Length: 609
Ligand code: X8Z
Ligand code: ZN
Image 1 (cartoon, rainbow, N blue to C red):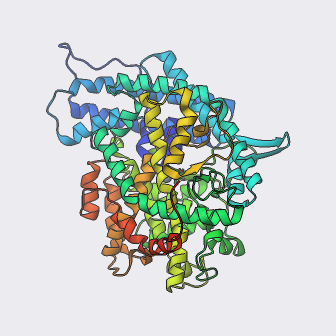
Image 2 (image 1 turned 180 degrees about the horizontal axis):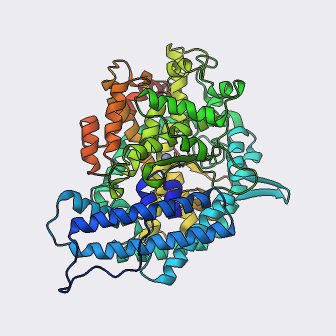
Image 3 (image 1 turned 120 degrees about the vertical axis):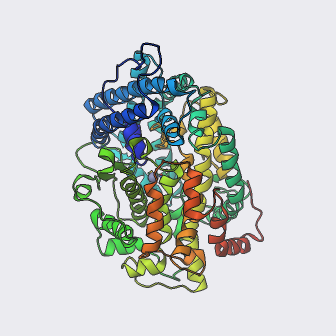
């Protein structure tokens, strides 16, 4: 659960799900005839009430654990996780009694969401439940407290290493950080294999063939349809990625030499300015198409004006307020963790929390004074505004229309951080919009949003394979790197073996947070932006649109958020955008100018790997 709330606070339902107390040991409520003593509606009402209570308790425990990693908080968090699992298993068993009944769609949906209300169901066995809870708590703790030490008193934390991967430009130095961080995951390898066994057993008991099938069932369509849907979207966007990859590889070849970056193969995974090669915006200075044209250097403004983490967060809040959304509550400012505490271990990976049924909103970050982190803050507040918007829904509906919607809110807002917006709020000095400035800005965006797409796709493809048994522990690392090469066109620069566990060096694997949500969000945010820009009365090119200050756009967006998970996401998407399908045409339109530039640059190159 802690996992749930932790990162998952982003998906508020998790908080609840991860949360309900009440009498978790009670027997199914059956009457004298063996039938249920409650109607389905009464049962759902009770589940919601219990979830609300349990949610408060588990949310509080998970917050303390994530912001204070010690042996003691591990005990508390594992106990809370076990408690939630027991409650969840019990409630799902009781819900089975309504399976054959005619129910209204909302009741049926609540029962379905109850069943899906955990990212790792526990087997119905107290010892195994405890074991699963402890493994989950321990893996996330290992990740949060993970360090790379050159000597006993020269250590770097995960977030320091991330920052160093952004800044360094020396091949060997980058490789040292890259290899160093991955040692953190080695002790998770066996635990992870056991975790998969236990969670699969839990998923089987709920009627799923494996945990991957359960995750894929969370999209109002069959697992097979969902796989086909993500494959379709990937096919649409792959040509964008291929052009970007080709150009970036050529530039890295200039910087590091073509012996280090061969121009006909995958790129060494440690050279992309990011620990996981998932977003490449740190490489912008190497790739700026028209050096010095257009001022998009937000990093330097943040430093010159010495923005505090709270001021950076205010700037994000002001955007949402400009759309007509409420200010964040005082408790947000009092209770959030904005910076990395010096005196203890915490989970630095950013998350947004909707505690106490969305009445107690917080972020947990270790904010640096960078444009990248500023965008992460806008992203996190998107979760918080979503959590606040659906707080009047019953707890079982307090989550995103699907996970991708939750991730897309704040990212949609970042698309409105145009040069015009940045100049208006004083984050850059001038807003230029000649052709060359546009291409520069598009490059900056593409290094973030386009570079991410294959990574967003493959993390769960790997896990789906692991959960289904198609990938066994004997080939965890090999299959991971096969997928990294196939989708991203990257490769490790040093030998990796089955003694390593490189997937575990990415937060969402030990924390068991599903990842397809981010891939979907990277498509959806452009769809949302197209709609919001239409509503705001904007008529120009999509990439130049900012809806900053548009109450009309904000109303539409907020109405979508208020619906939470109360109806199938297709209905929610239709109300918002007029279509029932996720579709990548908006992202393709958005990047049309850059694609022209990249095709020209790549004309004489031989692309692919
Ligand atoms: O995990 C996150 C957010 C919290 S929901 C910071 N993201 C993914 C990642 O960092 O891997 C946002 C983009 C992808
Ligand atoms: Zn998020």
